[in-house]
Length: 305
Image (tube, rainbow, N blue to C red; front, side, top):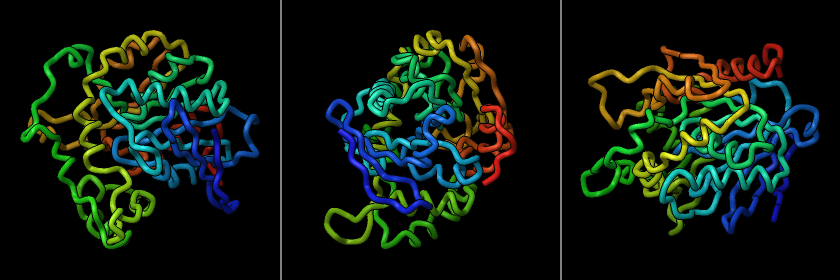
């Protein structure tokens, strides 16, 4: 079942797609250009939403794009998260329901992990993947005991979830790492589209509940099958990897790359760009650079709008 909301020409069309009983929200740009070139399917990271791509999209040539909001994120339905394989199944089901064929999947962080699985589940839907600092650890990490968190819950569950306004959230985050490194408009997009009216009518609350974000982090090593998906892919895969972790880093500092440096060698047709001076939050930190690298990978000219 598909439903669409009205939108102005300058804005994406908001839509909703039901996949296995779960309502997944999405945003679509340049629908009239569908079929002129492979569609781009964008999949965000943990705790984010479909509109964090706006700034990057603004640096790309006009092309049919869809930005999916994953379960429990943005305007999509909450749903159980037992392990990360659910994200791959959601993405594959969404791509099929949308009738995408030979699309280019572009995913960030956990979204990149999910795209790898989706492309293995339904290979006809994707012709290429661009993985922005994917959360894929070395193979043995998926067989280690799960981490133990104080109180049995990841610290993300305790993050501030309510704000008086978008500007209040923006002011708070603008001086706090990692958000302080974001492009300012990308940060505003994150805040503006990442809040919804609070259930009790008092102010605004995060669209991705802290408990949902925490649950995603806690189940991040629960999908050893991701390596079977990696080895099954026969399409070109570009990894854009961020800076390496330092030996003394805080384990809850997510500005470092979670990507195993040897990952590129596991793909049949893999290539890597290492941005050693950039953090994990690549598409929000430097949207123009990421748009340029995507455009070059797709064989396009320097992005212009």
